[in-house]
Image (cartoon, rainbow, N blue to C red; front, side, top):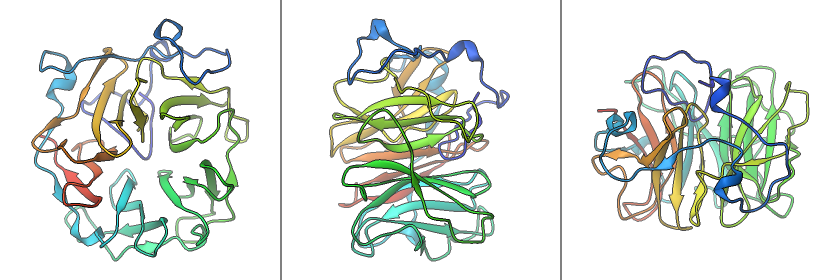
Length: 300
């Protein structure tokens, strides 16, 4: 399976390498909507009942709000380091949507007061959807600084120094957002167009240009699909603009279903999933208390 940073998922002990036969791409240019028969990625069919398949066993306990990270404004888009000791997210607490980071000493320790990533935040635009590399030296995020949503990337020499000036990621599709990458940064999944759909691109090296975008047509529906994680399992949100649920897909078994568990998905808006390896804790944003806060749910 593909090794990833933000959005890492792993519900079994299989190796961290992908079987290339499970992921294929079409070099043809993308359309905003592509019929399933033209699918470039052999993604899963939808399964919404409780019948078989490994995803039926991926369920979670009642989510708990992360109070230390909550504010009186929306807090969304969690992305953690693989050890879950640093969390990057977006918040409106300073007036516009900006990027923040919080840290803790251990999984049982409290989170520090969130600190703005000042060198990337602007007052004239929104910054959101962070993806942080495992070594915390590369940060992809969404901003509308150019007038429309676009994915940008910022790099730094080490995790304890500020990021250098960000640059826009060159893609062949407009209004791109919500990037998640493999840990080697050679594969990127993201959302684009309206209604939102999922796309994937690849490149030969971190200095090479990205390939033509490929629509994940077997995951895309008439609803919005957004905020993906990238792995053998794909976790994302699906629904209307303001009311979504968390979904999970297994490319190896051709299975897709709503994420199971006690009160994970509610009548409110659940979005922005991030799923940890090993213990499999699920982090996400939910508006169940009236505005979006960050939550965590333990794997059953």
